Amino acid sequence: MTKPVALAADHGGYELKESIKAHLDERGIAYQDFGTLDGASCDYPDMAKAACDAVVAGDCRCALLFCGTGVGISMSANKIDGIRACCCSDAFSAEYTRRHNDANALCLGGRVVGPGLAACLVDLFLDTPFEGGRHQRRIEKMMALEQH
Ligand code: RB5
Image (cartoon, rainbow, N blue to C red):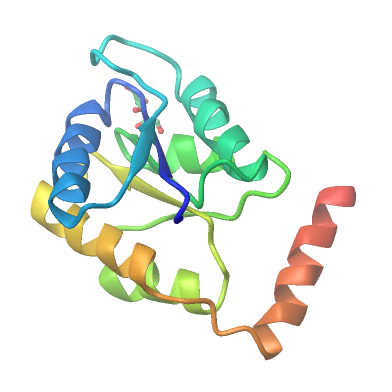
């Protein structure tokens, strides 16, 4: 069975997370919501950690993360060993971060992208496979940077 997608947002990304949950429901894609569950003010590093830990542990297939810009939560996610997070607001980046970077977290800004574009970006991210090949060597070098 396919593992669920991990979701997390701070207050700046809460509404967009909720709209993406409705989109995932329509597609029949399972998810686990790590909060915020009520939109109350909270800190994006805490939210990133909750969802990314589930990805690193192998309990979730990838993470969809949301804050106001998508930037703070992506910076936080990329501090976690094993996470390759991409903050983006365009379709090409959402597709190619899967094809070339084997990204396992997509970060979106609730104050940057609307729900329609966000759903397109999520679909591209979830549906695009990693190409492997020459990109695998680069991923290995990237992940080796965690040791420094
Ligand atoms: C919260 O106001 C805001 O700073 C946060 O959601 C995010 O945009 C940070 O990068």
